[in-house]
Amino acid sequence: MSILVADGLTHWFGRELALEGVDLVLDTGEHMAVLGDNGAGKTTLLRILATALRPTAGWLQLAGLDAFRERRRLRHYLGYVAHSPGLYPALTAAENLEFFCDLHDVSRSRVAEVLETVGLTQAADRRADRLSRGMQQRLAIGRAILHEPKLLFFDEPDASLGADAGDMLMRIMEGRTVVLATHDHALANRLCARTLILRHGRSLGTATHLRVVK
Amino acid sequence: MNPFRVAVAVARKDLRSEWRTRELVPALAQFVILALLIGNFGFQIDSRNAASIAPGILWLALVFAGLVAFGRAFAAEREQASLEAMLMTPASPVAVFAGKAAAAFGLLLLCEAVMLPALSLFFGTPLSIEVVAAVVLASVGMAALGCLFAAIVARVRARELLLPLLTLPLWIPFIIAGGSAVQSAMGLPGNYQEAIGLLIDFDILFLVLTSLAARFVLDE
Image (cartoon, rainbow over all chains, first blue to last red; front, side, top):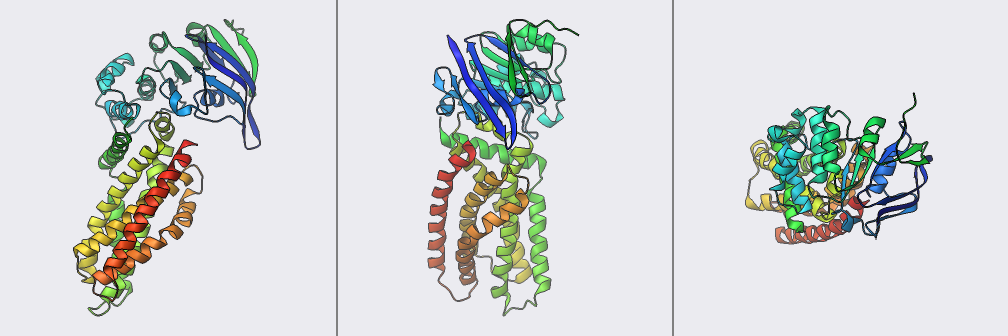
C-alpha cells in the first residue's frame, strides 16, 4: 500500500526554480535515498514531503490524506530531521526532548528510551550548546522519533555522525517508511532499497541499487 | 492535545533559556535605568513638574524595552532554526504563540520591576499600586501585539527596522490610556478608573485579534 504519493511537485524561490515536476510513490516500510549535488533540490523536496514547505505546484498525499489540507493531523505520523539540528542551546539534551514531549503530547518517560536509542544517555544533562556537532545531530534525530512516527524524513542525517551512524540509523529506520537525503552513496545503498537522483531540481529517475562509477 | 499545557511548556522553555543565558533581562534593565537617568538630567526636574515629566519618560523607556524584548522572542527561534521543529509538532500555533507572548510579557515584567522603583528614585514620584497596575495592564496588550509582529518580521532581513514601524502605531492606544492612568495616579488631573477600563478593553480586544491572527502567521 502506498503511504506517500507525490505528483508534479514544483517549487520556485522567487524567480529561481528549485524543484520541477517530481513524481514519487513510496510503499509502507520502504526506504528511499535522495541523491544529488549541492543545490539539486534535495532539501526542498524533503521539506515539501515533510509538509514544512508548501510547493508552488503539485500534489502530495501522505497516509491517504491530502498533505497540505490535513497538515496538522499528519504531524503525528511524520518525523523530520532538518539540515540544521535546531536545538535550544541553553537547555540540556533531556530538557530539549522533554519540551518536545509536551508539544507532541507524549509521556516524558519516553526521553530516556530515545536518549539510549541515539546513544546520548551519558550526555542527558549536558547543555545542547556544549554537545559536539555529531551529538547535536543525534539529539535532533532523537527529537524526530520521540512520537514514534511512521514516516521519517532525514536531510543528511549522517552529517558529523561517527562511524556507527549507519547502524544507528538502520535501527531507527526499521519498520518505518523513510526518505533520506545524503551525499554518501555507500550509506544510501546500505540503508535504502531505492534511490531517487535529482539534478537541477529535476528527477533523473529512481533506481533500486546504485553502482558507484568513479 | 491541551493548548494550555503547550503554552506553559513554551513559556517555561523561554524563561528557562533566559535564566541560564541572561541575555536579555540585564541588558534591558540597564537600558531602562540609563533612559531614566538621561531623562532625569535632560529635564530640570523639581517637585512641581516631576509628575508631568515622569510618565512620558516611563512610557518611552517601556516602549523601547518592549521592542527589544518582543523582537528577540521569535528572532532567537529563527536564528537557532528551532521554530520549524516546534511548528512541525501537532501543537496548536495559537498555543505556541500564547506561550511565547507570556514569556516575553514575563521578561518585560522583570524589567518593569527595576524601572518603576528607579523612576520613583530619580523623579521622586510615588510608586503606588495604581501606577503598577496601569503599567502591567498596558504590558499585556503590548506583549500580544509585539509578539505577533515579531513573528511576522522574524523571517525578513530588515526585522529590526520593520518591527518598530509596524508595532508602534498599534501601541499608541496603550500609551495614551496607560499614560493617562499613570498621570492621574501621580496626582495630575484625569480619570484613573476610565483609563484603566480602556486598558482592559484594549487588552481583551488585542488578545483576541492576535490569537486569531497567530494561527495564520505561524502556520505558513
